[in-house]
Image (tube, rainbow, N blue to C red; front, side):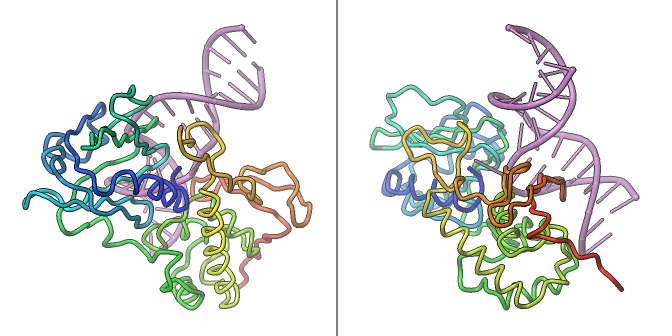
Length: 280
DNA sequence: AGTCTATCCTGCCGGC
DNA sequence: TGCCGGCAGGATAGAC
């Protein structure tokens, strides 16, 4: 469930169940899921109380409080197939679990991950992972003026640029395709050729698409991304282009095409999103 | 600087 | 029916 809306939804689902709880014991079935040494990680988080849960980009952060030299934050990145669920400890461990944090209220916070790309890590006061991240799309620092200036500073295809977390933090393949279609920009458009008006429109669209997706608790269209106890998410019903190749564009009726841009499957309406060839 | 390839992994789907 | 290649919502390192 890996883009901003899905990460936000996961964080909101888990937050009330873990904040205030103390981590008593850590288990792990796949050492590579935990950054560094699993034992060191366990020592850093065991005995710590979770005081807050929040999100930055596609990271979920649990703030920790406890022994002076232990970690201050625990970070989770879901990558492609990571999930977090909280269940009674005495219940059987869920399929595909990689890390289990047994809490002091008889529940366990499980990190599940079919493809094993996800990561769990402990950090002291500073979080170097956040140093190079771009702005949060839903924050006020991200607006049309900022976007236009930043696009002008680069000469890069729009799609890979919007996927670049150091440029803008939180978008992934689906929401980039949806946002570009909504403003009629082709994914290969050179960023320096985007007008101020287009940038302003795009900033608004990105905010709207993400906010609506969060409202609908993200999108899930296969069983991997469904939480057993939570809602599956329903934003996929709103998709205009993603996964709709071969079908008619809802706006103009033209057949949606799928191409590859920056090694990622990319969905585009050839009529709504024309690619203007550059002329010198 | 930007783009591409390979890599980390498993499951599922479509085609033969 | 069964096998197999290709593909997947992410991100990185290293080569051109």
